[in-house]
Length: 264
Image 1 (cartoon, rainbow, N blue to C red):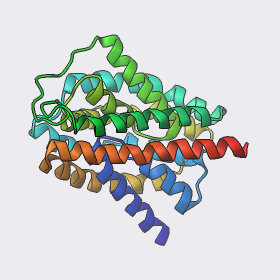
Image 2 (cartoon, rainbow, N blue to C red):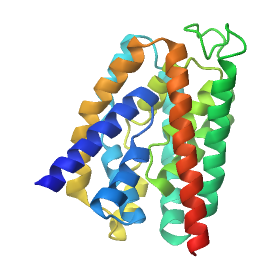
Image 3 (tube, rainbow, N blue to C red):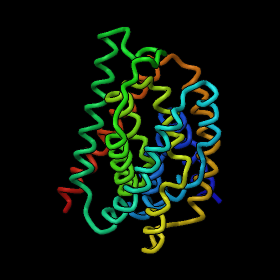
């Protein structure tokens, strides 16, 4: 019973993070399962992906959509890319050591975090600090699908939802308002895009279905709360909070990758 309650709490916390930052919540669930539940990293990845496969963020997406913070067309393209990329990511995670990629991705997140912090002291009219969405940049279908595939590969490898790729890309590359980037990312994650990766983990015995189901319940509750928090706060504040979040996650990826590299 204690373990089940702990799993639920992990899901709720991950859901709050998902609703606030447009991520799937795996960046919280995977390390928590490893540390508190004794899961292997591959087992945690598979279970996290299974929890994220259910439309746990639907109520959060409704909140964002009502406030005009969702681009459905873009979300559909990203979802297609996620679907294409997640299976490859799962295969890589099961078959190959991922320490080097983890370190490189950690560096990328640190860079994005730095960019967010830098913008707050420069142009006050920047789209990162404004509710205005008129400065959004349009990109080709190829570029958009490539972002989605990249997010899918990392999703399959690390058991995350892919929002850690999509949201920073939308904000920095496409000049999206952070709230709209979060809402669009969550919408892309509503479809069962993780299914190919989940099946791969299930076939190799690296998925705990009961744990995934409880995590999903927590994600639903937490994501609604997270969405309400983000929508109610000024965009500038959300950008700063997100920068801190990326800084912590980036350092975690970088340090754990280095530790695993030296252990091997």
